[in-house]
Image (cartoon, rainbow, N blue to C red; front, side, top):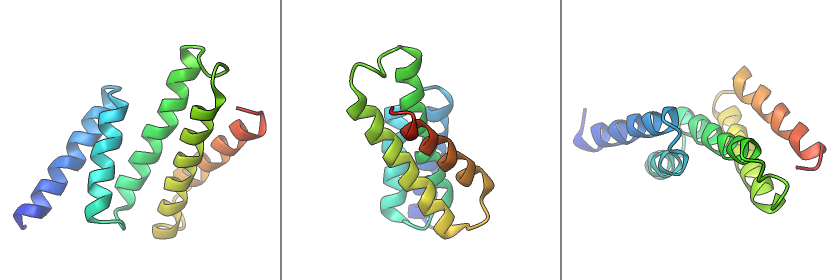
Length: 111
């Protein structure tokens, strides 16, 4: 394995750790960095989508969602875009399909 591959793998692992610890913006930065190196990394796109979904959930939990819908719609659309990329790479990925469905339902109710 080359150094650059190890570095990308380390960045990905950091992103997962950030995601697990609720450090969503750091997770987003890490997964974006991985994708900049390899746009066909389905796991990075999936985890980036999850981080974007959690940004919406974080605002819902803090009841900030209804104060400024623009940010939430942007996070939802970004998450959908990432999950669509996962489906381009892995057409049978059920979790990505389910997440897109859930996100579209949020858009349908006006969030």
